[in-house]
Length: 242
Ligand code: G3P
Ligand code: CA
Image (cartoon, rainbow, N blue to C red; front, side, top):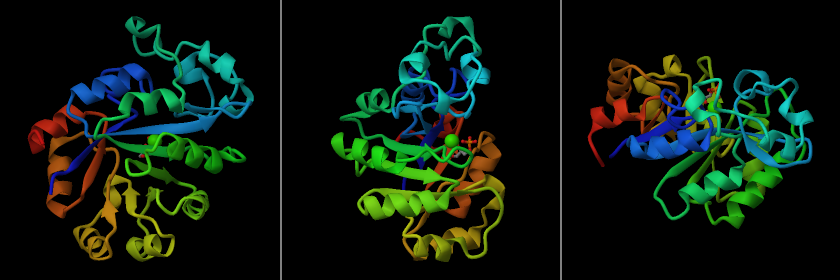
């Protein structure tokens, strides 16, 4: 089976992460999927940015949760990476939906609701996915597993994936109990036995963030179904065009 090449925050090695430039570029570099981080503005709009605060990638003080959509949209989310990207803003979720609509691209939306408990976020994401008819293309992931259970309750038709850093005890049984479709472990938490046991229950394994070809190869040999990477071109070269 062909392995999914999921570009982490878009083509984040060569473009500013979580910008439209990064999302467009990763498709040119062979990505078959895109991972991005979803948060909410103070007035309840879904936006794509990794950090809960704005200073690192948008050069502004304060938190995403305390900033209006209009203010967020006025920020420069590209210059920190390179002056060529000064025009890049913080994208809305709808902008990314528009980019992938009609394309066979997997979309992994990570709900960044571990530190900030965005009220109503699950309902908004589920509604947006349904409005754009993207139920089959989207996987919702989060380190906040209770939030994923809520998503599943709201939308049984949308796949969920459990993010985790450390080893879990029988993660496939845990995923089955939470009705998750996939495990998204940190790369060092993966074992061949667990990948096989997950597969036996219809649960796939998509480790993050894997940029080294030797590590990619080892995980492919363990049987993972997808890899989340900053360098989709490297993984694409390894597995061939598909
Ligand atoms: O989805 C995998 C990965 O994105 C989780 O960590 O910090 O890069 O969002 P982080
Ligand atoms: Ca992420």
